[in-house]
Length: 392
Image (cartoon, rainbow, N blue to C red; front, top):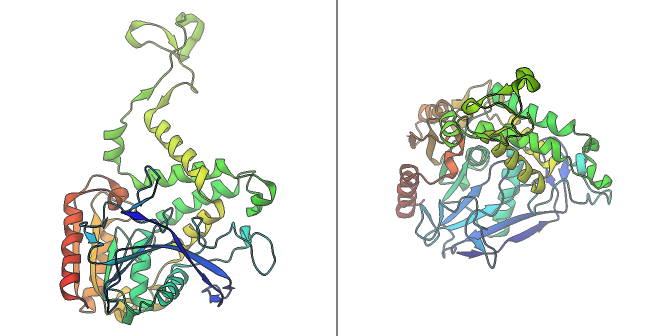
């Protein structure tokens, strides 16, 4: 499936939950499949932290350009683009084409940098609703997302209940735990304390806070994998460079003796394979992701809590939702544990809503929602078969 990115511009200011507003902004998006005559087969896909509008398919002439959820979406796949018109959108504040901190503020003529306004999950949903208006789509057959994308899908059912028939919330939660917020804060500290950060205005200095971004990504990546997967992939294996053999007396207590020989190992030369993997992920991330975007998006994660204005009562918060739901969780996902999905399920059942729930026994941790697991894909396929036959 060959796809092309698109962009939609908006001149009307978008009011934000912070009390600020943003004007003259654009949203990058892609579409897959064909919108039917009565415009009833649209499916909106909401992305997680470091993803984008490029959800499925490939770009012409570009090798290895598959969308981040290409296992899930496409012709004949669980979200079948032969039957559904699928829309992927890049959120405000991101760094993959939509207006964000690296763009020019029309009010000042300068790059936003750290002055880009705070955005929330609810703000993203409002912006997505405007994009759908621009496409002439009044209602969604489904809204779907994993992790932070699942929070957006949930928020759609609360902000625009009449516009959503089904919501598919995967590996997500009604809010972040204190532990999750703590991980996000440590990652943010790594970025803002990088000497190249310059208070968020590093663009003016022609530098990028790569050291901070590397550490932030390494911290995040640890939380996306399960202990079982890390042990299976890497265990305690070393990537080692052995220096010339030396007498034990010459190297003292630092000598190691594999196979009976005396060798000197440098702490910089010995790497566990997991260290090498994390460094690789950090280096790659620092080349393409924007530091201010990372701060914005992790804050949006932290702030999301629809039950907050209902004294912590999630059932009361979800009472306005009228959509039917599918929730999926994964047993080894300790960052968005199954019990968090069950909280949403219980709150919906308390409101007598139509809810399907699948808890997949998968070893991959939080990343499982992006991977090819036959049971997981079958659950989603069956649900979208149901939507295709019975929507709305």
